[in-house]
Length: 276
Image (cartoon, rainbow, N blue to C red; front, top):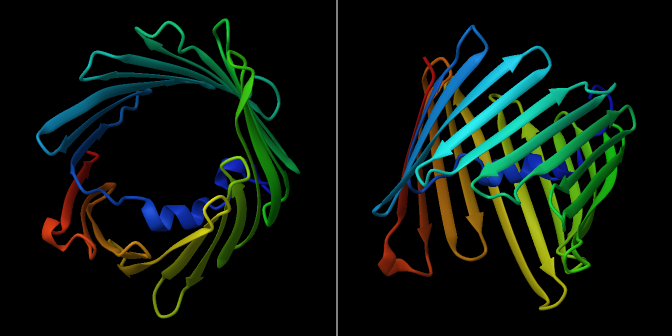
């Protein structure tokens, strides 16, 4: 991408990642086994209440082509074939699920010095069409996205956004939910005496005149430990501690307390990711 803008989906992503990424209130296990032959294997398990779900995926890379096959506990098989530089600055991906015969989809991404364009079309008689574009550069980007369902001849989404990014901060303004929701977000990084970030997101819904907000922080305690916090206007407080106990392997403990549901008790989660 270089000096070009990030895809439209990345507008506000830095703030969203700080507020939501790695928070998990279930029991999760991930085992990744890389290979020098170009074949990688990843097994994922998730226990939620008394239900356990999981999947096994394998990735094969050869030149500019990547094949990703995933099988879950319900015997669903999803396959994705990605070709980088099929045309200059273009990436194409073909995906489908078995046994869903209508799940075929073609995604194309084009990255330019002043534009990032993503398109998607369902490979069935009545496809869902999606187009997203961002224009500008790595510092300032303006974009939008639209989705159209040919089966119902109706728009499924149309959103717009603008972002301003610098190494130490990022601000974004997004008009979402077909123009019914306005989101503004900001994240700022402080590098003294250690790396810390603070972020806030404010949401206004025009139809109900409701406002909501969340703010949080991330603090690098040492090169192997990160602590995150999150506070929301709905009375929920969350905290996360992630420790890398060996290269590319980490354990994450999360907790959330809802002050409006004191009788329910706090939610606790544990995630373990291993990579030999």
